[in-house]
Amino acid sequence: MLRAGRFRHRLLDDEFLKNQSLLAHQCLQSYIELWRQGLLTDVEMAAAYIFVFSFLRRPKDFLGGPHNQEFSAPANNHNSVSSTQIVEVLRKNLPPPLRHAKSLTRLESPRAFVDHFCSLSWRSIPLSVARSLASWQSGRYPLILLTSVPSPEEVLEMQAQGQRCISMLIEEEQLSTFVNEGRDVLGFIVHDLIHADHFFAHPEKAQAQVHFCQKLRIVITLPEIQKMFLQDPTFTGEFHYLMSDMNSVPLHLLKTLKAILLGYFKRRAHLPMLSSLSASSEYEFMRLFEAVLAPWNLSREALFAAQRLNTPLYKGPQDDELLHLALSLNFHDERFLL
Image (cartoon, rainbow, N blue to C red; front, side, top):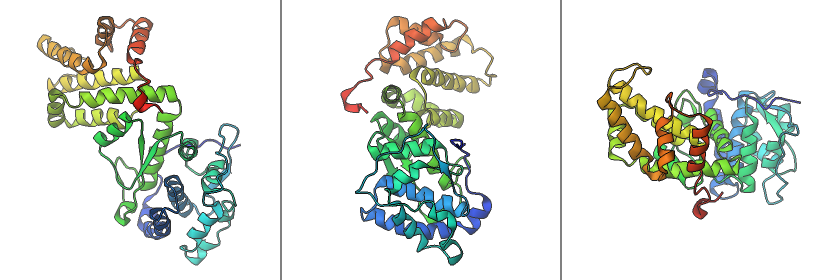
């Protein structure tokens, strides 16, 4: 019985980027052509993409053992491309020393490729990737496959509509370098699939975050927030992370949002984070926070609880319950049901 696997931002080392990225690009072309012709679905293409890089980085042992009872693979789909067909496409593009690698035979199967992919563990690829692929195939996870990296605003818009994106970068120069934050292209698509699972694994929590994103979409249009984006790169980075790369319950998201806003005021005043704002800055901060909270239309009691967030005055479980209920209203907006 194998571990689910741990994710590292960087999955392709310098030697791979220098010596194997061109081969990876060449191997991907046949799959991309089939995908663009409609002969591979988006989820099959994403799984094939991971397969190519996983094999080339560890041609002798890219696969682990079968999954344990923690994960259930999707039912076989007879309309899907088989795992053997996917393997044969790769073989035709490999140099002779790799073409007959014994490790490839383990992936050969008449089963649908995504089904078989998800039934096995993959070296350095967490179990949540298989869950996302399986749920994407079954229609449970509404994922969109892109060949670009969307802006935080674009990600927020998709999340506000109950969707997540999966970025699969395919240009030759992209494959030989880092995308951002030290991630290579394999790490990037794996990261997106992990976050998709975090976002959608529990439908009620997913709808709660969709609701939060709908409100945050209004918040970012506030003139004060737009001005802060222009003035403070740290604030911009933290806010973008909240918008597009953070999965949590609404109460924790709201706590984070308030901390990000407060951080801006502390930096502007050149104060340590544990220092208090001046009376005038504190008043300005609270006025802004009230404006930020306006889209939630909180009751007077919930507004006071939100104002106590992250302060010694916060009433613990009492305020937690009050805000949880307030932030949980209207989750089941029919336009965004998952």
